[in-house]
Length: 105
Image (cartoon, rainbow, N blue to C red):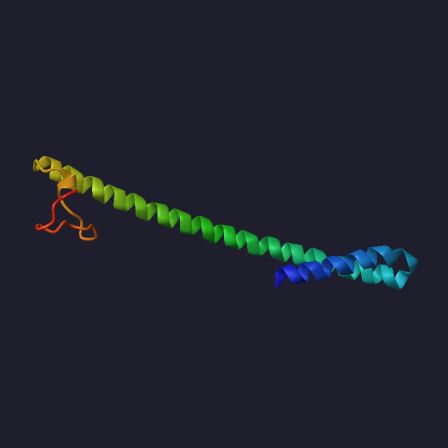
């Protein structure tokens, strides 16, 4: 996973920083690891940007759907008001209707 990979890169980087100054071979290795570490962060940044773009798209799509639903409900309420009926007088299909034999509490 990304967390394990990040942890492993962090440990390698810490060790290389401690020992890089001792030899040119270790310095070269340090630079190589540092480039890998930077690459990981650039990749993570790109993934996060894609995630945010998709999330924003989904939020906008959801908000647009809710707006359309609210507008449709407003139109229905207006039509019922014009006909002289109260919008709340109609039971929606998913609402529980009282059995005529039951007394309202």
